[in-house]
Image (cartoon, rainbow, N blue to C red; front, side):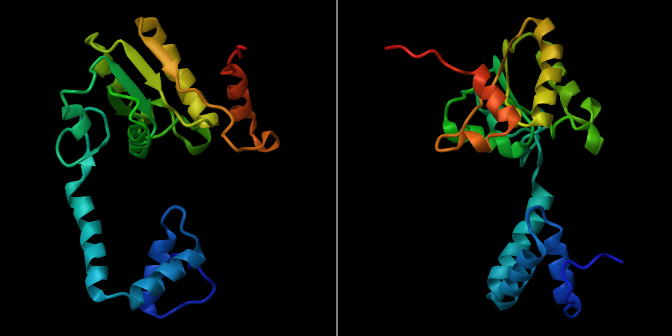
Length: 207
């Protein structure tokens, strides 16, 4: 029997909905309850549109055969775009990271989504990621630069270090996204990884 998300148990379908919502990442028991009761009071047409959208995304959306980004065909729109630079690949952990980088409008190359990061504690090793597919993409020599855009945490650092050891002997230009202290942040609240990267990426000042 599945554990209930709240001490209070509602009647059948309502509690089932709360339980399912509570299984979503970032949704706690109280948030699950609020969403459930919002749906109960919402217009049936609005709820139906939400249900249809959920079903459609599972039926139509897949992952790009080339880069692993979300797509509605064998390849995503970025891989199909002839205006993208074929010589540069930005490696990210998840498809959502592609969206974040695209918002900057600074990168005009292509992407490779690993599907996670190396995390021995969680049982995720290199073989569980799309690293072999990345190496196959690099085999023809078209790509000359690889940008490692892993999250600035322990798992991201481990993944970037592992990839760098694989890619540097191939003669590629391999870079890591700069990271450091956020604007408006306090030094005392910075974690060790962030502060260490800030020191590594420090800049010289000129008069």
